[in-house]
Image (cartoon, rainbow, N blue to C red):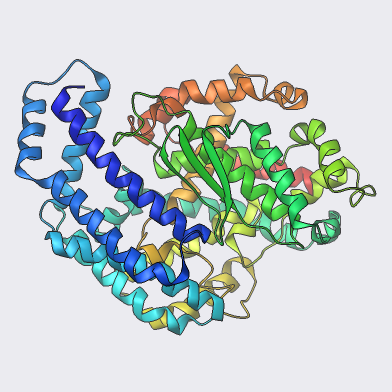
Length: 496
């Protein structure tokens, strides 16, 4: 990469790294409680400085020169393209307004935490209203694209190429194919034993097993950190400093296990970005592709019998006789049980996307001006009753359960559903080239990691999702693999 461009990329990476560290400290409790207002100001300044650097005349001139005389280097071409796209999206936004927006998202996190702690949406509603209006205003500066709505622009921020028209078709297909299965299973809850999943398990033992689990999956602790937070997440400074968190509940041992597997799936993607793209705008991965890796490891791999065959004896050993009356077959069936529930992060594979549909439909209404902030909790509950037949007792298990809106991440939720569908399509393609079951039963996951590194992880965001998927599978995005996977798995599990 030419020297002047590399210098720009390095400086932007430095601003990002500083932001990551401060966010990490806030989320993991490493920062003092009273630091919030001051840290929010610093985060706003960093965002403003990064904004100024990426939109200044010198940067624009450099990017134009790079585009006028393009390099033969594919990575440099992709970096220039990404930086120019970012410039076109943001250069019209007044810097002060951009900085205020980032200060507001930092404050929003703390307001949400307090509201969730007291289970009172009214404490968060005013801030959420400001976040929505500010997000609309920020997006209003972006160049308009024919046929795209304001919410389409929000979606494009997280997953390029997918619009409300395509997502509506996707979700309509899931409703049509899966709602009858959800209803049939809800009437057969006695088919699968799950009582042992709520046995009290010492938190320190849980931490020990989850650390073992992350390493078993391939997380490199020489280049990574494991901590705790209220809402599990993965972040990174670069591919040599990747950080994950989990959350522990004495009475929900499976929750931490599958949070750890999920976040390790994200972390493997980050650690296996190539050195050439780490600390550039191409690092990480698109939201949906990233989610495809976490959900593939969490569900298709992590809930399979083959995965637990070598691991279950270690699990029983760590928890010292607490599960001696539970056979591996019972354990595997239990961790795959399906039942409509209120909490997205605790939901099963089958009902998971219904949680995403609800958030997607509400976000569309929010950005189309069809609903006020104060009406959201009532609509939320109505949709949970309609789709899943469950009703919240309070806002904490209802509309306040997710952190995303506090950070103005409107348009992010659909990437979770897309990630599930992409995971099924990628797994199908991988299984043609790697004996996945043999690898899992042997306890050696290296062939799986090698395949994913070759076809997905090394590229980061250099290739857009639809191209990456076509290159890896030979097909366009095809949610039928996901639908058929779920129907086959749960029909067998519940003997339908």
